[in-house]
Amino acid sequence: MSTHMITGAGSGIGAAVVERLLARGDELYLFARDAGRAKELAERFPGARTLVADLGNPDRLSWALSQQTLPDRVDTLLHVAGVVDLGGIGELSTKAWNRQLAANLVSPAELTRLFLPQLRIAQGHVLFVNSGAGLSAGPQWGAYAASKHGLKALADSLRAEEHGNGVRVTSVYPGRTATAMQEKVHQQEGKEYHAERWIDPESIAKTILLSIDLPRDAEINDITVRPGR
Image (cartoon, rainbow, N blue to C red; front, side):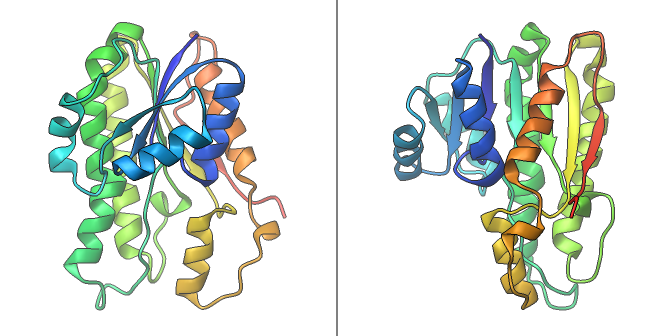
């Protein structure tokens, strides 16, 4: 039985991953932004454990986790959570920039730092759910793309640093996926949202499990998934 730590478990890709891992009997720790959200996750996913840690406030993550019981072994750390606020460079406030950088980049870096000792012991796996915006930035996507480009740099550096310790690192770059975030993006773009046009979160979940279940003789560094319709 493997132990997985997952951000963004409450919906979309994260929820699909949680359901698959629970179904096969693995041990899960789900990050929640507050106690209320933790209770919701615990009720939705019986058998999973929760940890309260607000990704919007990376400076407090170390303190928050020090007040809770953490696993001695971590096989995978799955960074699935993310936030997006579209807007032109000439329009976005520092609040919008800081919100996206905190949740999408700084908190994943801090959580990775905090759990590296356990990951090294287990020769575990860190997986970042990035975005197509982490490879190419378009109009109105500057802040979000900057956070995701930074996430790619984080993953690449981590891989080079931890390869000798046996820690595998994977970045997954989904195209538009039928999630609540995608619905929000369409609202910000002023477009109608049709979920059936985009990738099913289950397809990304399968990609994630493929990456973490790969035998130890191989490692997927980067994998891009695009809508097939």
